[in-house]
Image (cartoon, rainbow, N blue to C red; front, side):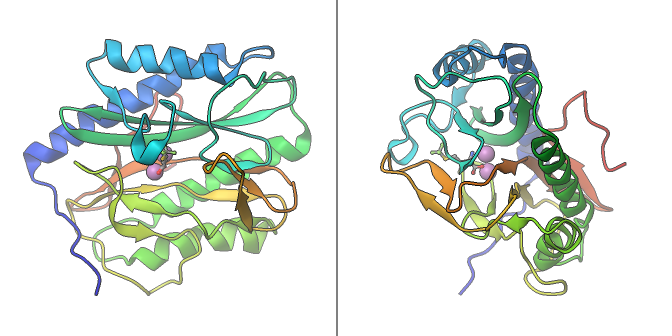
Length: 259
Ligand code: MF3
Ligand code: CO
Ligand code: CO
């Protein structure tokens, strides 16, 4: 039995807009600090302070025992990397995943960062991952089905580019809770799954691997890595289903919506 998907009221939607705007601002704020020589722990401290300074709280901190305020996933790390003493080196790619809690509501967004100059393989993976996310977002409108989102992502990332699309981690409904129904698979089937309705809010956050889609979790209990050691990339937005389409709640000023 699938549990119901919450339809946000206009008041709740305003709160989602505010927390999501802040989460997007954290990604903009941190970008200049992502340079060779910085530690992932320093990026965590900077984001932690920025979030508190804006009257919010970092959702990952102590979430199911997660020890830090953001996730930093480097190279073959798929998601949920724990910030620490790791020094970022020229050529690394890193996902920074931010989730804010503002006025009780969660905003969740992530993007990839290049540390100095990166390989053509890394750059292409990141570009395809972002475009895959946008294709998923463009599938969102009232009456569409959840499976349409994953189908759009999978057909592009795997069908056109041959990359592995991670199945073990999904997008999710979001609001007062960090993770709530519905689950958004990134390998869906067109025409399958629930119908989308105005007022639903959820994330779309594909993880795309150069090689196998399979992951394993390191002994730290959190960090997911590719089983074959190939590079992985992810990008994430929180979206709202509107009366006639989709609103990207975590949109940044450096992005063109839905173009
Ligand atoms: N922000 C992640 C997501 O997109 C979840 C991180 S959970 C944590 O759903 F505990 F690792 F922070
Ligand atoms: Co998420
Ligand atoms: Co996230």
